[in-house]
Length: 116
Image (cartoon, rainbow, N blue to C red; front, side, top):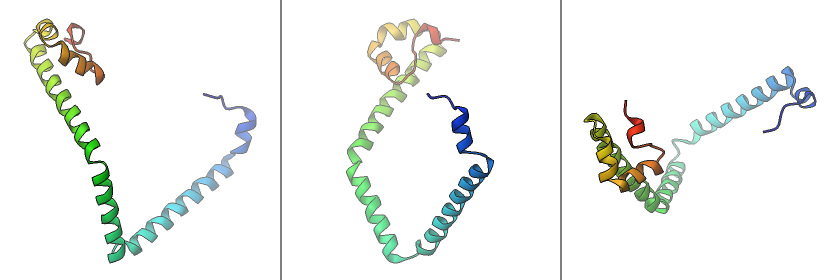
């Protein structure tokens, strides 16, 4: 990361920062008004629905994959918590090394170190 030097600070004094924020806010307000005007237009509604449907169809497989991965992770985490609650984490680690690997891949650290 680069450090901010005095020459960079001179570019954005308080007035320039206020101006940038004001321009941004005005643009957001214009965009909001433009959307409010056209959101009830039947052509806009149809285009928006078609775009959303195309996105859904294009990403159906990705969504299914993410759901399956998350489902596996949730089941593994639930099983881990069961063994943790019953003070049998060592048994969990020895009995289910594949489930431990799934937990590790999701950033969850199974094993004796996570017991409280």
